[in-house]
Image (cartoon, rainbow over all chains, first blue to last red; front, side):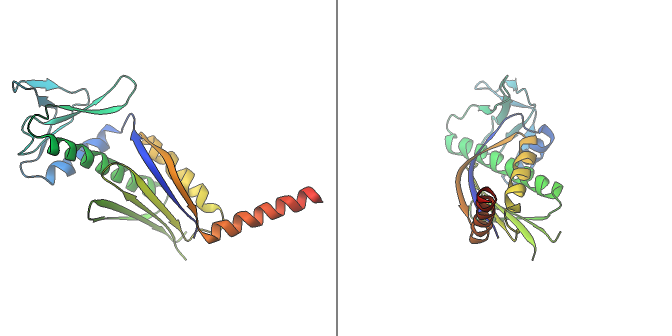
Length: 131
Length: 73
């Protein structure tokens, strides 16, 4: 037995395939959820996002998109008018799901058998190896 | 005894990683490997807390004692 580390995380230059997978999972968890390659602006016209990744739900009808800054920082874009709470919640779910998927892949690459579970708002990734 | 790494991920992106079943300081190598692999996915971790379990403390004390012995010799 060894140690416990607590950390805060930031995402720069994410793996877009894995990020797309995270968006599909988040969309699938919400009524009317779907993934598209653009958002709708305040006048409901399509607006491109540079990752071509956006999520819509029944409540977020204009969508929430993911953009990368020139430095690679991940940021969310969209019109949160009247849906501020959902807008914030979906952002958190995308970040949490992306980190969870990446952690699972990392542990598998280390030779661990991995399982995931959810306890209230926390995602728990558990890796075990007998090597 | 199996080696186990349990990562708890909060909605705000903060994490708690619990390493157990490791011999001595090998858990620190596993932590570095995990951090490097996550960096490949663009995830940068900034450590905000660290708690050594008794087994790691004992191993570190042993290594420190050996180093002091070597210096005195």
